[in-house]
Image (cartoon, rainbow, N blue to C red):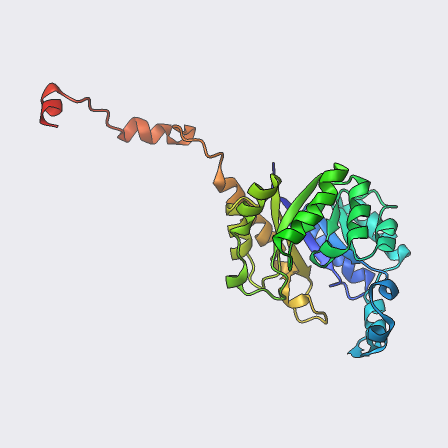
Length: 287
């Protein structure tokens, strides 16, 4: 199975559909398989007291204004859907509440995504699993018991899923990647396991994840790390996306099939260099 690459736009569009389209184009041109956004009903996800609290942003002086400024409406997601279809790249979004998941279900999405903070949102997990659509489940900030419970919803519903190892720090220090979780999760749950990364470095950690058997890679992308937003510093800039895709696919190809035999490309060297010298009776006696 070929490595599946997801470019996480998230909220790095800063509420601007033009920026979103530029990021979609950059991901499509680089060879990503899909882009991903976030969708939330701000008034339901956050309490009124929190939303009324102060926060300076390009959209105002409260948390509510900042959160609403980053949300796309139905018309914007319709544009995203059309633009992605036109560019031949899949798209999806991680919902943070059941209303948002119902909204996303109106689109013919190739997959669902459970964000790490949502592993404890049981009604949302049940709703996503009931759709029966392939679901990527990020496992950041979660214990194994919590992953067990979340996976149970998808197993009972017969919904196909793939776990994604993740460390939910932004940006993530490389020494905190803990990539040995990838084979551990694969063995524990008997499923494919990908990697959702938040490191600021470009290739090293993602390439190592592929070497350890990751079947999907999700990385945040941005036009410029200096732009406004909490996720920008943990993102890959659009200009570097093509090199990233080429590098991780090169690692995937270099892994081969694990079979040991004389490979076709070795034949010429074997014919020229290999020595097949039989034991003599004297050699056997001396041994």
